[in-house]
Length: 145
Image 1 (tube, rainbow, N blue to C red):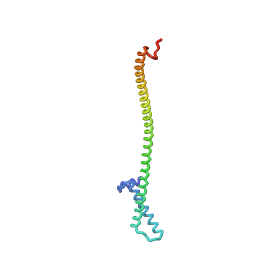
Image 2: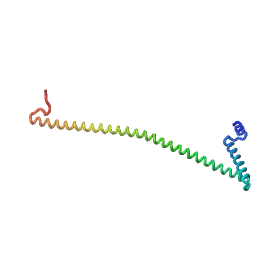
Image 3: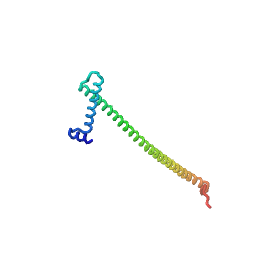
Image 4: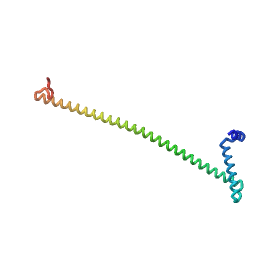
């Protein structure tokens, strides 16, 4: 670590650039050794470096794609989690709203029944008073003790 830090200070490169260059150099050496050991046409250094660069670029692309896939997957999962939690809260809210609406309907129904009873009692009382006066009674249904 000390070596790489000193080296990066001298060359002006950060550790990522330094490791990339070291990896590139090692790959070039490996490719050169393979081509010389295989006995095939000896490749020039330029061809080897081009080939290694292409391989490194492809690996980098693959790594970036994999990272993007992972980020998208994590983002999708967080969105799904948020939707699930909001759906739970929405479900609870919907239950509360339905209960409140039922209570309101019940109270309105009670109020209407009460009003109907009062109207019926008033109309009946008026009719009963008229009938009782004609017959000569003070009223029906009331007994004084």
